Image (cartoon, rainbow, N blue to C red; front, side, top):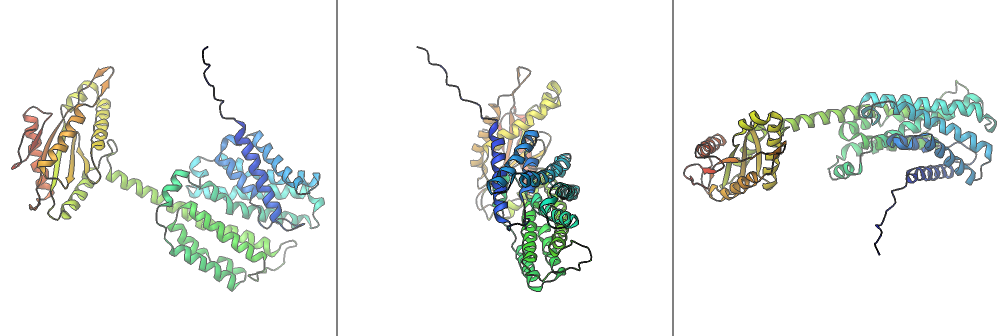
Length: 470
């Protein structure tokens, strides 16, 4: 009896949607349980977190996703004892903020949306302000029966909380690196001085008190922005901002403002001031990160040949001279390699095929080399290798391995086999021998390479006094 093949079901498309509903439910429950009884939340990150999740996962940001977010928030309110009318109306205000922030940020290019540019950071502040306005306006229109304050006070309370929380939380989500990038960055050392100064400035803010004290951490935050990644700066601004908001709410800073406008409270003023406080550090972090990325790209272009991945001539010269200076009478070999009949390959098959040959040749050679050995493209089809720790007599075995690997390299173009071979010239110094300069080694290896080509190519020749056919 034939055995039927086992069929594995495809991963359910409902899983991400179910995860979104579960996340909404859990965040809303946590926010409800953390807020004071019969009061608005001191810190309500649910809307900002969900907006960030939808921006980072565009496939979830459809009509079904927004409906499930709304149902998750309503379910959490009902589970904690809220009546149907306020649960429906309040969460419609929250949904209005989420949709507004998502809509405005989703229209930006990805580079701006991930806060890689100052324009993206400024756009985020505008989107958070718009989201806070929408939520506050809906609260005044639909939820007024459940508030004892005036419409002005209700609007200011909703707007200040929504705007400040979104500005503090969203940058962290939008700049969060991928798991792979995070694991790489986690191994890099972090400067502690800016972080320690920030913590000290927060302590001074609380100890000194007064409205002006919320500006004390600004210098430390700017230092952090120049020192850390945008993600880490976002984490620090969230920590600093939330600490100051809690300190003001608990009257730890003796913060007071003139009540010239009805409904303006100390906490509202502090929230708006703290939200605007983090704008500068976030913009500086974006600019600093962009400059570091540009410098890294320029350094890479100056060090690595874009076509083959080998070192450039200038980078090779610097590193080879460093090896010679640190040689301490250890043996060293320099090889010059030249792809045989490369001009003929270009003429017969075109320069595009020639570029493919160069890339494949470089990859093959790099796979044969060991750590600490330098490989560079000097120009055209000419390459160089420095092998520290081996005199030319022993390094010829490495050269032979390279020659055979290139000779056995399978390469075809339009069904036609293209044979690639390499000629190699060796020069160097033995143990305890005086090391010549790099220019002398290059000249000797080049002469040996010339003999290898003159004697039939696809061979290895050593410079005097190590001349030997292989």
